[in-house]
Amino acid sequence: MNELMESEAFTIGIATGINLYQNKIITAHDRKEPVKIGDELFYFQTGRERLAEMMNKILQ
Image 1 (cartoon, rainbow, N blue to C red):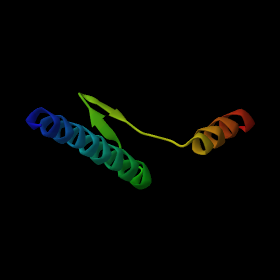
Image 2: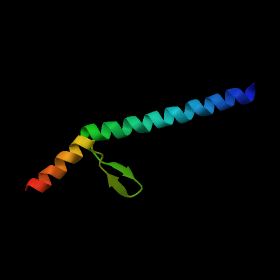
Image 3: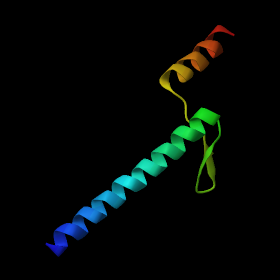
């Protein structure tokens, strides 16, 4: 029974950690801020934003 409770606690911890990082990425996207991974900065776009950017480059 103890192993089952430890396994459940581990699973809940992993799910919580994933949820926290997901919220961090969504917040950064909404604010148009980068997410720093290692020494690099990453910006996230929706498919619609990426398509609009590509269309603007083509039409210029």
